[in-house]
Image 1 (cartoon, helix red, strand yellow):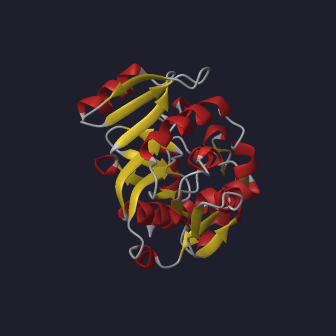
Image 2: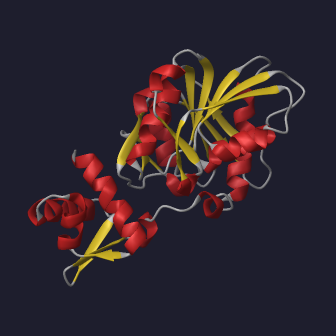
Length: 263
């Protein structure tokens, strides 16, 4: 319940910009004391700030719309996506989640080999609709407008479609926690995609590393490979390699792989 409440507080502050504890309590149908405790916890992880009896989101923590975020760190995303193609083979079944970095993989998928893609990203499905050799399965559920993604209503249905690899994005990444998101309802779909794949590849640029976010989407022990860019802290890469994670580091300017640390 607490996680759902925190996610709802984030959503309300995102839409209204500023709220009082009483306004939040009325919306959440709980006491002001409960809301104040929640705000204390969110403030402690730098997601919320309070001033003069009101609460508002820390600017850096505010989630973006898909169409705003797709152009951020574009060269990093493209280089990461190209490196991810080494895990795609003829007749592969791959999962692509709702994130913009994972979506970028779909732009580079070859159309000259047969593939199957399972995705929760509406924009990815549209991108792949032009590639006739790629069979696309769109996860069923409710559309989350902000991220153009589908929140699955029946994760067990996905178990009928075992996959070779899942390409997963994240709002934040840190060790030892793993991947994190702001939006709690999206987490279940990400977890479902990971659960049906033999290998999970996290696609994450340097701006997401060692940041905080609300919900742990994919624990570190479920991540097999991490692909990032060369602006990511060497300390983070060293920690990941030390934990037996395969790590690929790309150069955004050339899209070349600078380092490939294999398990």
